Length: 138
Image (cartoon, rainbow, N blue to C red; front, side, top):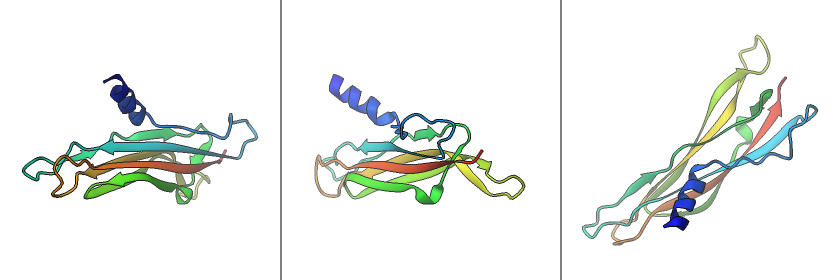
């Protein structure tokens, strides 16, 4: 029970990895966050179970923005009839004043899985790691 609770807590907490501490002259930092979800098993009558994780979320330090095009999603493990990952961005800021060019400061990731067809008790799951790059804009 305790091991399961710790696994659930760790899965719900985003992992933020920065390339050391962010100094005033640092121009680029990289980081990652993880998401995972596991379904209950397919029922005896063939009814499949679906599950979605909570959103994992990271906001980069003030003065930095995430370069959306450099985001990479790594599928670490997956099973079941459906499994996918959704990445979205928030907290857009204008990076060059007066141009309307914006980039986000926050990245979010969420996973979805569905148990397989015709396999009583079999579970579905999805586990991903998302890597991002942030650059200083101020």
